[in-house]
Length: 358
Image 1 (cartoon, rainbow, N blue to C red):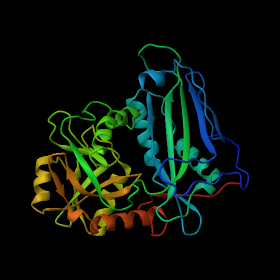
Image 2: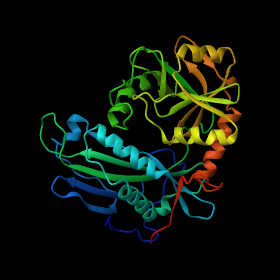
Image 3: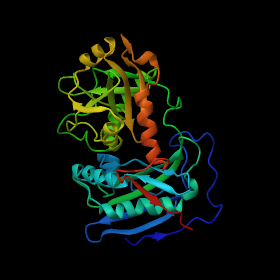
């Protein structure tokens, strides 16, 4: 892949505000390329992070043909940088593109573009504890004109910015609302694609329940409104009796999380049993009240592992592990972030080392 790269001069990267927060500041370089049927993917470049103009009739603005990914780069103790499972993000990006009738990318080229951008903006990879560089590849439809059909032209771009913990409360437990009325996705729909519309569909409930003090929403299946699917920004796992980790089975309406897959592969090596099951929400709440569920946590790129301390709605709230972070969540978090940051060995081949450029 040929990429026209405008590197950053030493000291050119503007300083970032502290504390970093999440998704509020961005590196001074971005990657972009275009797709047309006659040229395929072309004009790949890394240039200044800057606004770009769009025709008001661009397809993405009217018909929502858009997908994205989220992954991170981590500062290692030796000063080098780790990417975590970027090949899986590239593969999922293409699955999302296929579902949304969009042009797919060569996965190796996509990973090369991500690594090249990280190598250019290496000064933006923070070294503070629990911080990282969040990377957002995005694909949008750029055909100009009205009419419901798949676009023929696309823009692919990648931006990145340093982030701290996803939740301002850090590793402290979050309060999660169970949505029994509104739903996010249905089997056969786009729920397993990482498309912006899926997140837009979740915003109304998230905004409403935030007024009640909830930080996340737990979505149930759209048909029976009974089976646990995922949390707004994460997959979810439940710990039974301190030793068995259970997560909802992929159903076609759940995003197949890369961190989720990592936990399912890592946990048995840490001594835990794992299973993917169809989880009835009333059974889950009953198991919490009976003490059989000893912990619960969200699983995702942004937060890695996020303990859940309370689960319920405006009528009843169940508390898990006395609303405290549990030992299993902490064990998984330390083991997974140890690999991500290069503090621990990576026997799974999950990390890719990126050398600074310029």
